[in-house]
Each structure stands twice: as C-alpha cells, then as structure tokens.
Length: 95
Image (cartoon, rainbow, N blue to C red; front, side, top):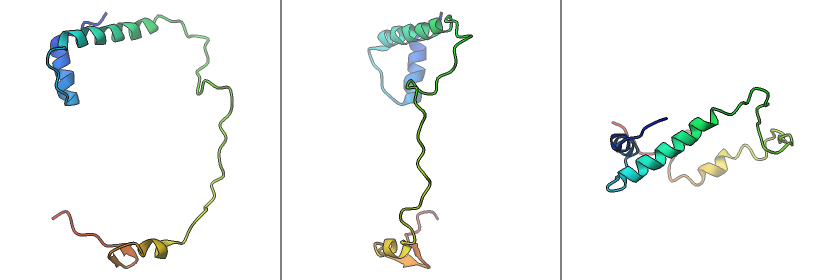
C-alpha cells in the first residue's frame, strides 16, 4: 500500500500553488486512504464486464449540423470601435 509523507504533501501543495500549514499529517492520511481505496478497486474482476459509455441505456441523439445564422460579419463589425479590411482592429500587444 502507498505511504504518503509530509514531504509528498509539501510537493503537491507547491505544484498546486496552495499553502498548507498545520494540516499536512491529516492530509497525508486522507490521501493515503483514498489511494488505498483506489488500489482495492484493482482487485475487482472485470473480465466479462462490457465497458459503459453512459449509465443510461439510451443512445445519444445528435442534432443536424445546420447553419442557423450566417453572413452577419457587417452587423458584428458595427460593434467594433475600429475595423480594418473587414476585421476587428486591436492595439498591438506584443513588441
């Protein structure tokens, strides 16, 4: 079984960019319990179990790929404070 140390918690907190002060030992125990529970799932025999895509036994209905609105570039560009050649003009941000 996996053993999570306070050093592991410090590394995780550094990678996640969160500050952990006094609860390192508690978190180590909790994470270790979760990992042990997940490892227990590996003991389940799933040889004859078909993978599930969805818990509901209904097919997904796909909508037709239809264009509802189009050719409205001129209407959209009316909202632009500045436009050039049919595009939004924005200030240069990279030098």
